[in-house]
Length: 124
Image (cartoon, rainbow, N blue to C red):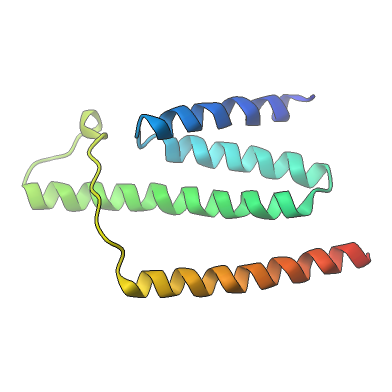
């Protein structure tokens, strides 16, 4: 086992603990974990796992961006400044139908693209 595999394992466990405790810092750890896993899987030629962790990286990046954006929205709605000590504020709301449709389309296109990519790599 090399350093990156150990780093991926440790940050993955930390990510799970932060997610269970509902800490928003999990997005930052998720980005680090995904990047490390992408490196490990690409080096080992496990391209499907590399692709899956690419999805995890994108999801973690969007989660971090969304969290930052929601903090600013909460601050303006409550007319108070949300500081780092208030990072545990979690706002749950229903997804708009358009988001559900876009997510479904992206998922289907992603599945076909990944399937095509894997069949192409298999032929090489």
